[in-house]
Length: 487
Image (cartoon, rainbow, N blue to C red):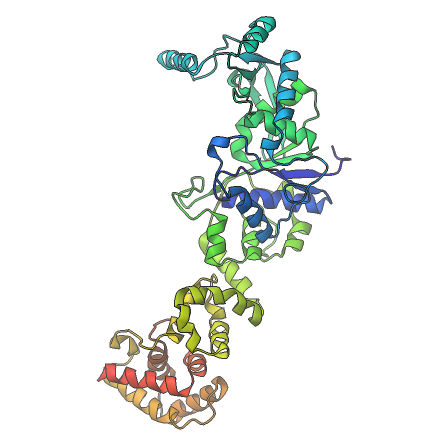
């Protein structure tokens, strides 16, 4: 295996949104493959037609491209081992299922849904785990062929060896063994001619020459079934690497019941793809240093399968926000404006038309330091697009002052600022701080009511930054309105 070109795959089903766990699985496959100079393959597993959702496959393409995890082979790109959509490979699965029957490793089963239900009821009554009891397991092949000719519906089941130890090595979890008596004679080919996941995944991984199978730990119990299939076909097994689950704050597997888990939701909220990828890389893997910011090329160099944790990692939204905020602060102004404008337009619509491009750009640039995600701009910038600030007069009062003191200070500042000729942050700050010293005022008792008067908020950018954006006329208007509140 070591001398072969590394080939990995991500094989999502088009049955809904792309889960954050799916993206991390894709990322780990991508990082390892690129590091080894291999091929990263996308395959769509759509054999469960009843669960297929219109448009879900296109969303998979969109999410992977958005996140920068572009595939070498697969839908839209082609490749030597296509087609890469399972529903277009049905004849292959039928061929290999019948090959297993011919070699004695599988059999035709004619049990009806009613037969299976009665089997389950009997097993439940006898306190047994539900399983296929095997009435068709030793049926005569010639007789089975006759029944097929007459149109009797059938499935093909794997003939699991009795009481054998199935062992494999996993990169993360080490040596793992299952007794075959715990493995049911699973269906390989359904009565509608579609394969089950177990047959399709093994056939495809072999024919597409996958060297490493990297997937979620939920698939661990299925791996012995796949090992048995590889052995039945006489094929070389790939290397397995099962990834620990991503957990919610309740330490249970992250689900949509407890948190936002759709990559599309994170995208809409304004998380940058590079930041989300950066965070997901650290969610189950440790670079062995205190660093936490890595661009994709750095991740490719540093990624090590042996440093993947066995324990599930808790999804920490605050940590993601922190990393995303750092990425936002590193954006060039023109790029930041481009990314923030859609959120402002969604929030304010035609109201934005009364403001100049320069004004809007200054607002976005000022708010850059406070953004945890791009969508925050809509709320954070409200103070710059509101004609009437609504807040309680008590918010204007510094903790070591009182209402009369706040009014007195704002009166002084109002009169002082009316006479400022050069209205920009640097001049405003220099002149105002000098004025505060001359009047024997403190910074707190002066700057607190000034900032609240300008912003209407307890938490906002500094007063000089706000005044610079608002301009002299609007700044004085807001201070005057604050004074009315204090009367």
